[in-house]
Image (cartoon, rainbow over all chains, first blue to last red; front, side):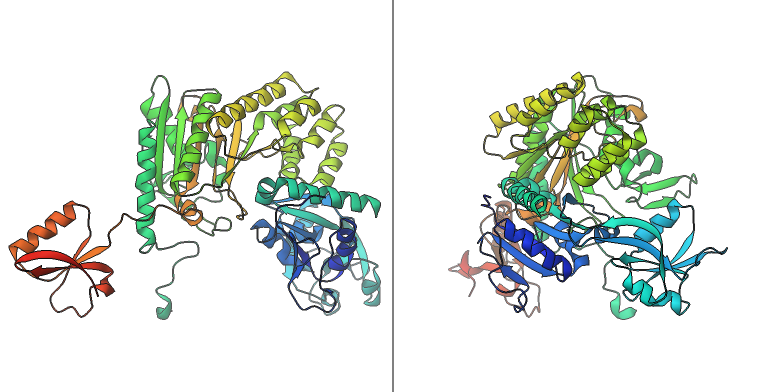
Amino acid sequence: MHIDAPLTIALPKGRIFDDTLPLLARTGIEPLDDPQTSRKLILETNRPQVKLVLIRASDVPTYVQYGAADLGVVGKDVLMEHGGEGLYEPLDLGIARCRLMVAGIPGAGLGPGRLRIATKFVHSAERHFAAQGKQVEIIKLYGSMELAPLVGLSDLIVDLVESGNTLKANGLVPLEHIADISARLVINKASWKTKHASVTALLEALRGAVAAA
Amino acid sequence: MDAERWLLPVGIEEILPPRAEAVEGLRRELLDLYRGWGYELVFPPFIDYLDSLLTGTGHDLDLQTFKLTDQVTGRMLGVRADMTPQVARIDAHELRREGPARLCYLGTVLRTRPDGFAGTRSPLQVGAEVYGHAGPESDVEILRLVMLTLGAAGIDSAYLDLGHVGIFRGLARQAGLSPEQETALFSVLQRKALPEIEALIATLGVAEPSASMLLALAELCGDDALERAAGILRAADPGVREALDYLRRVADELRGWLPEVPIHFDLAELRGYRYKTGVVFAAFVPGWGQEIARGGRYDDIGRVFGRARPAVGFSADLKDLLRHGAPAPAQAGGAVFAPWSTDAALQAEIVRLRRAGRRVVTELPGQAVTPAQLGCEERLVREDGLWILTPCD
């Protein structure tokens, strides 16, 4: 892999970061500092041209769209909320897999009247119910969605489901499948054009790493 | 509330010294440049009937256009969000020239939402258009003007991104896609979302060779894209290959004029797909995530105004250009301070200096600031009955 232009890769902390590092390692990119112990937000790597920046998952599209980072890794759930405008998303990294689902107390959501949906994924939830011809009221929450139906804040929730254990522990069941989610490589449009050789070299190397994973 | 009266609306800015002078300097330089190339200046109105604004390039600007009701007719008015449809109307309905018409324009447009990174809602739009000529020659002329425009702003490291909407349009037609299917594919193609493109092509049941050609389109980019396209799109309809040939001619001729400008092709980049008919392009600068100038060919844009003619043009935001450029510094010689006096010799010297292009700031009686605080580098002092310039302390 030949990279001669400086490239900044935005990575969200947490699970995606942990799963992305092995893929990057397979392309020959490794952080110099131990990300577990370092408190740095910009990590240098063994490739002097490549830097990693650690940010919140929901900020990754913004960083990449505006070119503060050339590339980024972000869940499809975040991209669906953001709209993906101004970004290229050419590669499914196949990591951090989960499902975006409608969930609730068994039998919930069948009655008449306008449903209240608690979710962090406002746009995705709106689109999903609109496609079914249902007018719903969205209640934006930032976490612990499972609580909302239990305390009467909402009829249903829209949330990411991995194993389903959190739902089960709170007496909820998955009701409808909205989308399969996995992490995507996103690329800034201008970087794609002005650093084309380096960006595509990294893209191809990652594609190889994903295929080999 | 009162304490925040100074606050400006989101995306609206005041341009202060010295930037205002730089903006005005660039404005003059650009208009002189276009004039030298035979482009005639037009001033389209700031507000217009909405249905006339939302034509052609304006289609995509419905949400971006500020709207108000005309108290005279009851019709909807819009504040221009893009001047291109207005200039198209001027060509089609007012000028009605035979042969090519070259028009340029410069003015503030308003957008309802902050636009991208710069976050402005009031770009100072500058642009130029050629009407009445179909062919690579006028495309190349516009592209040369784009680079000269960037050069005037002091931007000398721009990349040109070239594409042609006829390639995707032809492939979609060849694959027998309905308008809805074409729109769906267009949307995932703009994001180069390969997994989704693949899934969509499979869902739509597109047959070979169309399926592989549409899939390959997303990655037909880079400086060698045309060479690769010749092989990959071998089985495409003649219209697609004509579009490729056309793009090659534009690029070849452009390289002759501007050998130092990096050209990047992206055959899946379809800015303004709905109204563009040929070459599309944008200019980028390294380190900035968004395009700084854009344009393309939109033949027949004037049809809704009664006269369909070939058209090609570009536009940019002058304030955006200035942000990325290093415009030539203001002409040498700082301001001159003149003391308050009705002395005829002093007044004559002031007139002489101003005629010579110097900036002369006269003292007002009772003022308590020094010449240096007024930004003056020199001052007029009387020595032996003569007014002469000496440096300020």
